[in-house]
Image 1 (cartoon, helix red, strand yellow):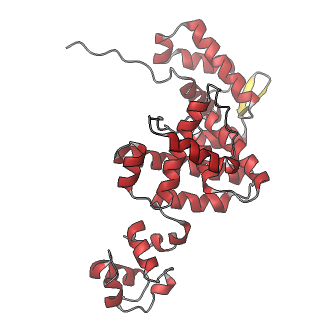
Image 2: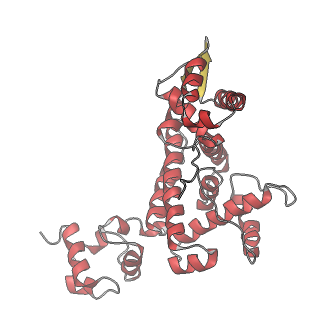
Image 3: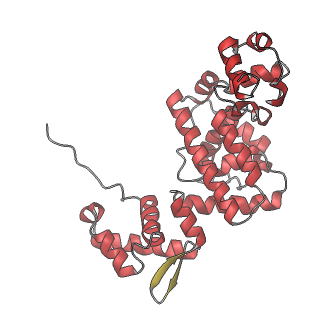
Length: 300
């Protein structure tokens, strides 16, 4: 069989933004001629029109300078702290810009709902959002109830961006259900996605929340503790009240909830509890109870 044609992954605006910022931030090239020369040697350049490539690179330079990722002195490019951090986080600069904007707004809002941060990360180009299907009218109902807590304005219904916004919001809703301990089976049925898709969204959300927290740190926003908790909630798929318990090895959200419902709400409350009593708790059993006891120091 004939080999299938291959195309360069640099052929997107997102990839160009990421790679050009990386070239500058790493110090690999610091002037326009060097960067253009390097890009001209790529596989993408061989597949592209030269003038189109030059226009695309010029637009990326303008975007990076305008939004504070790079500074230009005497025709030499230098990455700013924002640019260096964005590059080290391996996110699209446009995602970084969205996350910084969300953090700035969060600073004015006071108490921020988890939905606010989840919607923010789902609005970035690095998150692959879920498509809206027939029968998804509930998405708009939920949006009406939560829109006042979001960090970005909801587009007008007639706006071409509205459908994309709903898609992002649906993805944020999936994550909100996940951290509120809705089962994977229920999420799969409700959102029309498989387990693999669910976990891909969760992993991307962890990565973007981590990036958001790192940006919050360099700008000294007060949302770092909230984001730290939210990262752990997304990782474990649990409510905030279980974060202490899920820090134990082999204790996921199901076992943590069983312990919590049995009256053991913190790791400290497990100390001194008879092994037999722990073992009788649903989903625990003797082996897990023994593991808990060893971790908290009740058994040497």
